Each structure stands twice: as structure tokens, then as C-alpha cells.
Image 1 (cartoon, one colour):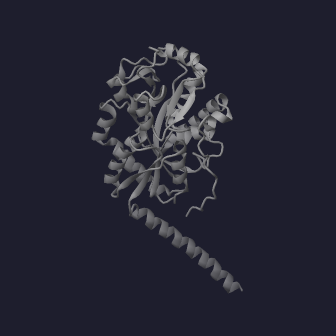
Image 2 (cartoon, one colour):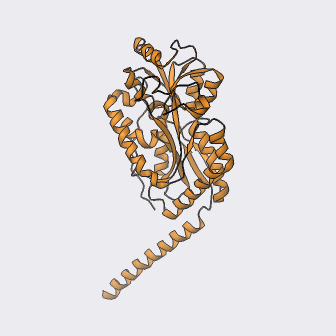
Image 3 (cartoon, helix red, strand yellow):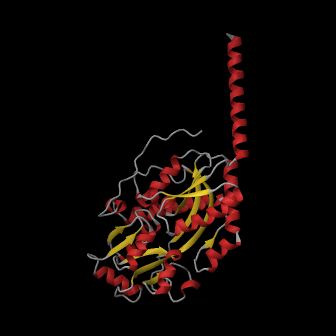
Length: 348
């Protein structure tokens, strides 16, 4: 019996050693096949555009294609849920943003994932400013008049967004709270379709990042009442800040970051972070984001920024839970089907 017991101990130790050796070998040979980067929004939107730019750069430095997969639904939480359930082997990552990985907890009481506990940060891509936008024939001429118009027409005015929890939805909620209105929410499958509806005059207003909005504002196809920045943006000098227009409390910032499923090995995270960092340093991509009036402030791929994202999540929890009732958190007129809890498969 003692001999059998000693054999069992040796066998167990050998198994652990072999497992560690196998893990080390996998980390050294990673990546051995293409990597999927999930974008939880429709193609053509700001998150999609940014993800495709860095995916191209990451592919070159990491030696394998980084393939974009658009997984649309529930304000980005459908794609985030899929990423959370993927194997923690570095072959599935996600380009999330302040909606999917900060505000979603307050907006979706039955959210299938925890943005902090179920993901590992690879790096923060960028942050950008938010604009208050309206169809070009909406009567108000400035933000003050716009606020009065919303109050006087609250029963019929509508607001477009890219889904409950999307940045276009979440960043507009503080605006509605500041004005004191609850407009009819019109959800779309992404920011691109929502912007197209605004240009066509099918919806009244929306909030969107400067990346997506600047070309339309410059072309005169939509109105821009204000931008949430300390000072005017060089790309849109004619657009006043919200503070200039008497609404300093409206100051949301939208950010985009790349994440991996929880328990992804540190060596793999380091390789992905280095590839992301190199992609952001690429001169051509800097031109794309900085020179072409895109309005993004590039941020290094630094997992240490995770602490700040945790604080932001808590801030959004307080803001949204205090300002919205349960019906609004699901979307008043068009509730999406909430993500369901499923049994998570064990990490390997």
C-alpha cells in the first residue's frame, strides 16, 4: 500500500510537471494559428474602424492574421459574452469599450459576465470626445435652445443609439438627465446605421464620438450642438464645448480597449500587448487617428490602466442606477432579450 501511495504521489507530480512544460511550449509557440478579434458592433462603426486598423498592425508584428469578427447585439454584450466564454488561449480577443466593459453592469441586471472578473486587459487603444448631434432641420440653433426644445416636445422627440449599453446610448443618458427628459429610444444595430438614420432625418438626435460624426458635421448633413471637451476640438472649431453652452456636467468620454478571456496566460498577454503597442506606434496609424481629423487621443497598451477602468465602472454604476428606473435600463419601448447565465466551461 505504501508503494502504491508513493507511486501515486510521483505520478501526480509528474503530471503537474508535464502540464507546466506543455503550457510553456504553447506560450513559446504562440500564436500558431490566426487570432479572432471580436468587435461587438456592426461593421463601419468607430469601434470597428479602429479595431481593423490595429488588427492589421498586430498581424504584421505577431506573425499570424488577426481576423475581425463582428458579433452584433444587446449593445455589444452579445459579443462580449462570446469572448468571455472563449478558451483562454489567446486566440479569441475582443475590442470592447466603455459601454461593454464599464456601463453594461448597471444597464443589464442579468449580465452574463463581469467586466472586471471575466477579462484580462491587453491594452487601451484610445479615448475620444462625444458630440451632441441632431438632424439638420431640427429647429434649435444651439444647446440651450435644444434643451428647451426637448422639454417642450418630450412626448414626440426621439433619440437614436447603437443599442442598450453602446457608447452612443450611455453617453447620451447624462445629457437627458441634465435636461430632465426621457425621449423615445430608437435602437439600431450599430453606430453607422444610427448615423445614417440621423442624416436621413428619420430620428431627431443622438450622441456620438467625433470619429464617426466629424465628416457629417463638416459636410453639413447634421447639426452639432456641443462637444464634451475642456476646449474646442481642432477638427471642429465651430462646435462649442458643453461648458460654453452652460452644461459643464455633460462631460462623458468614450474609450476603446482590447481584452482577453480571464486566465489567459501572462506570456500570451505580453505578446498581444506588445503587438498592440507596436501597432499604435506605427506612423501610418498615428496619421489615421491624429491627422485625419479623427479626434482620438492615442494611449499606450498598458494593462495598468485596468485600475482606472474599474473606477469608471463604479462611477457609471452610480450614475445610471441613480438616474434610470428598471424599465429604462432595459430600453423603454424595445427591450432586447437579456443575456442569459450559462454554465461556464472550466479554464484549461
